Length: 161
Image (cartoon, rainbow, N blue to C red):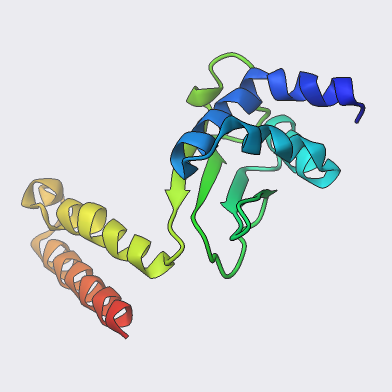
């Protein structure tokens, strides 16, 4: 990609949306995001995410040396904080209202902590609330409650070890 192509790609509203989220979430200067376009492999990864229907996920991690690395697969192990973008449906990300097509979120460096928060804040309240089981048979509702509390206990045991 020529230098003019790089600046044109960086001015694309889809990249502006991604870059804005990355810089705010990771508390970085915008220059860190624009520097990502200087590496051909990274530009290709970003372009594939916004243009190709088959690429549904983009993960951007911050290395210990404060460099951003985009990837279309989950990096293991995650040593620093990162962000993810997931398309709501297969397809290219539109230039207009791209935030309606993409779900963004943060990745914690300690995934067990993130799982514990997910279980505590989403699964337990959602699946333990009796108002959510009104259409379920009593046996199913009791079984779900038992399993969700077992999951919560297991996650905390793993977190403590």
